[in-house]
Length: 316
Image (tube, rainbow, N blue to C red; front, side, top):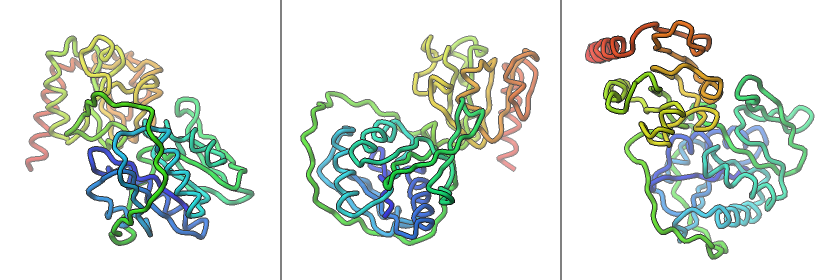
């Protein structure tokens, strides 16, 4: 059996979770077994997990705040009870905190940020990006059990089944050693790792008061906003928008970079984007070497005109 931890946020399963379930279904088909989704806590759309390939949806109630030790114990117990050979999680902050613990508790080999279906020729191997996305490596998991985290936007989830009502199961829930005093969450936008369209800006904006044209573009396109590290460090934008090697690594279908020079650390976090558009007044900006399309010009002239053109195009 392939067990997929169905992560939720604000009582909802997001696109990345449906990707993981769909991936788990594909892995289960290769292994000749079934894909089962595990929900911890409450999520309003858990039945939808069946649409993307889960033959069963198991639910463990009575768990509120996330605690990686508690979740690891629950996931491992469910995997043991149901004879799972493979556990799949999202390559999110939650999944990253679970992967190592699950590998130890489940006595399994692990690979993070996989982006391919397994190849069973000569064993069980999967691919992932390495060297900041410049190369791809193949990892052969030699243990009978395995744990993997799926890199976001690796494959588009497709409806392959029907809705499945969750079955509540009973497991031992350890006492959490973490006390949550306050929790601030970001709502109303698509999380950067899941975003298919991203509009990002850097120090070329000259100040936070000028960000209106970037937010306008994002609003027209239905995109998520992002920024370079210096912008986050000087508090022009919130840190959760920082993309790059030291921030959030993303691979959207479209990445628009406005007023960002393209330092190697920034490129490392965005170079897996399918299409990169760069707007910069410096023709020697390193970002142009990685761009699919580039506009050399003053962003304060280019972006408003682009927004106007985009608005007219969408209206037509």
